[in-house]
Image (cartoon, rainbow, N blue to C red; front, side, top):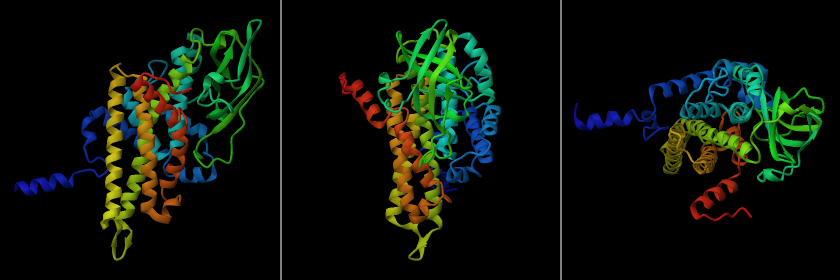
Length: 400
């Protein structure tokens, strides 16, 4: 075989969704995790998700959660208590595959594992961990995370929810807003102001005075349960409080775990949209030939593929740092800021390639694009992450 023929054969093996060969940087075990999660999504989610999105509801969501638990995806990066204890990169790859199906699915898993379960695993008492973590890992119990409020988003220190001591109990009053899993949750991790600073509480959702009305009329994350939490004189025992952590250190540590999953997950939405655009461009004909043969379409496809590869390299670098114990939270902000912005632009550009068909649920692009508008905002807006990175670069805070 000639040298020219060999080079041609090599070019033909390139994956248009991974032009720089990031796949080769993964171990065999990591690729196996990715393949397993992709197969689960193909069976449990992909055939149904467009319908769920259109109707704004997930059929038999509790059974879906149990299936995810049986697959080892809930709290998969945590140790013990029935959790899989897998690496940060494994978890990131799982988030990517989950969000390639739908951001709402990845949100369900993120809130369960990186917010509610992580909070209990990191800050809970031994009794909290024994009571909730094995059931949550199995998918037999669902958790939610109550931090954001109607008037307190980017500034959680201004939260109005309060917990006061009454004898041996705590009494909690307040409202939480935009809470994923809230209406189906068995347990809520609720953050509230106290005379001793902000504290976290493990609140069973059967507690009198607790309710979680469903938020409807969403145009994004429609295949996801989003709720308000209402706490009217909810009484819990003293043991419900996290014993040690005070202040924003507790909730922010949990948010950083969720943000890590997002910087991977958003790439899944981008990959799915780029794949749809590439396939469509190869079959859609205008002026007597496929639109993939036109220069402007090729420029869009190339730019999107490059941005996807850059985002994946960034995610893998951050994941390796996390596994090595050398990750700085600012680096997570860099990843979340860059990858969600890039993913959203990939989805928007993919939509232009599909033309009017791009707004149809027959294709995943508009669904991913709408979902990423929420992902851009939650777990820290682009503005907040920009200022976090800016402060790290300059040593000066621009938050106030």
